[in-house]
Image (cartoon, rainbow, N blue to C red):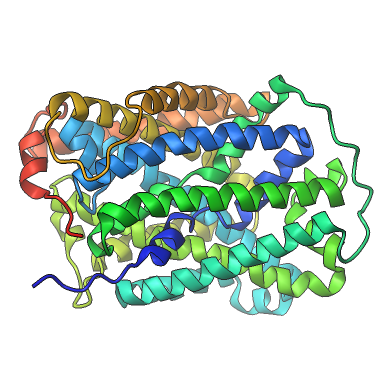
Length: 455
């Protein structure tokens, strides 16, 4: 008898949006609004189409090959284990190891403003937060679901309240908001890369498919509902920023705090700090749960050492979680309080994320051609138009990833270094440990290890 699945639609939606309702994304969206004014909303609209393309590809692949390894499973079936390892390690593990420490620095910096004595006593309180969510994730999927749904509900509610209050003129008067810029399509296109960072990560729900209720229906719905929620909340949030703050404040280091204070006054400082830290907690909860299961799935497929695939008594990926959390702490601790030290690495990691998305689009095209009769509980409509749009659109975003010309060279060097390092590992591991051709698709293995998910 199949065990009762722990993740209903609400928890799946909360997982899908868990990596975007965070401080770093709030800052990026307000920075974009400061640069482009209403043109940034056009950029969000274009980015939403690109995000829809990857949602459609992931929905079909996740239900066709329902493995916790997610990207690694799809790519091994379509393009071989070599590219599967590259796509997952560079597009997810590397992104998390660089992006989460940056978010933890923001947590410590915010706490230093509102509770300096706490930072002085604990040095890096964010590491306590990391430890807390590591321990909570060890308790299994039921507790994860309850925590994630509560955190995301609070975050979205808080952001909508801020946005609507800013648009309706509630609270304090606007602080010298600038006159909106005229519609400028070239400017809007130049901001697509910045807007897209607010719409990535919906596929983090896919590794949770084994614990989802009625995944054939709920998994695609979770990502589509999540995409609509993200677009709505960040459009409202950006419009509030344009209405309440001048461009120089929107493009500053902490525009999210400035926006909250401009609407609600100084008394909102502590409340907003709590909201922002809850956003960081949502990110931690999502990424620890999802990426650890990707690592577990890779280990179970032979793409990583087998011990990383082991579970504890509650079904949590114990050693994958422990190794992943320890790696995050090892990256965070030496960075101090200077987020600028990892700016280029963080943007480069986002570039690797785009490469992973492009690979997933190629995966779907290849598997449609090679396995046209294989059962697909969800089929991407208008195939292959969304995938081709996604490949070329994400290629454009990748080529325009740098926020300033002087950062372009170090960003692309770091992308090359990360992709190169994972490629070297994948070649060595597949040739000498797996003893297989890195570029030979493993269709038989994928179909043997996967079945249609149960409703």
